[in-house]
Image (cartoon, rainbow, N blue to C red; front, side, top):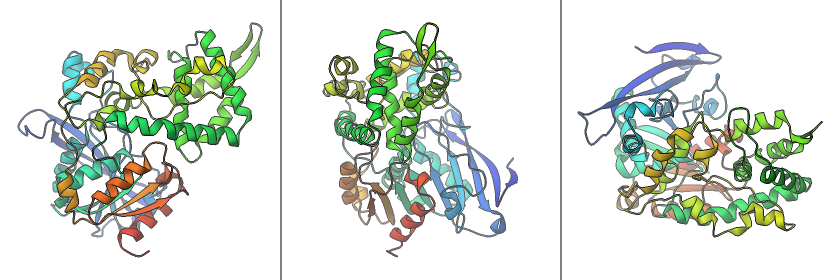
Length: 433
């Protein structure tokens, strides 16, 4: 039964749907999906076109807005919006260390999670669309990984789309995970260099913290073991609009004086554990590299292997000299399944996913080349998470796709620049600019 309720300026309805775990076996096991329908309070009784929002990730549930926040404010001017928790996230049959043991051992868990990629998400959306719109096509807004899913949507079920809008999420159509990370590490280094240019005092602060971690065993209050590699992974923050500033404030107050000498402050540790823990989104770590798997090659911890090709990211070598410490970015590593208590029970499952060789293609080049759906994509000029060069090659491969290339925003432009970013994309796709 659907339940409706109000927040300032909006009416929300909780919706639940049943879909097959494996869409190739519609009579087999099913899972439950959750979504929130949102409509402007003064338009609740009107017939409106639908907009489906696909969140970035993988592994994150849809935004929990209050009222008409961020890009939702612009969308509600003309749409009825569906905020879908993709399978395994949020309230849609969440996949975590607590729930996955119900599947059985690691092999059964890995087989189960192989159904949690973009192709399955698109099939979910088509099942949901039939129930929500009565079969009418809808507009899809895909942020980051949601954009990857949108390109899969254009490949697998374009008949379900009226319009496609993509922000920071045009994937390479054919790059292997190794190719993605070879392009990523130089971008990450540029972001770190720009951070130190803005905050040169952070060079010594980062080196001091890294040196402390190399010589001390630090366990955060939640049981997370803070290694120097884990500390470096805080560079993920540098891909967002305000991330450099937030990282600066974090590093500024890392140490306190104690009777035993300088120690990492409790306040610093509390902030770090909230930034590093995968407790709220373990699926991100489990299936992240699989979103690049499209052939018989295993992903095999590609980010970890490719990192070895960039020795400047080696903290011990850096500290032996006088170079600035390099942070890392959106990369998943096997050691995360040892340091993070939310991931430790899933280490063997992750290994099996990394070794898997039966990934199927997520994109159909021929269908994309013949695309008839209006598509607009925001490409952020020096996006740390998604390579702009890869995105623009894909843009050229999708018939009729129009790009808005900008250096005004980082990867989170839909959040930091909202509602302007959505307004601009709608103008682009409608040929109004």
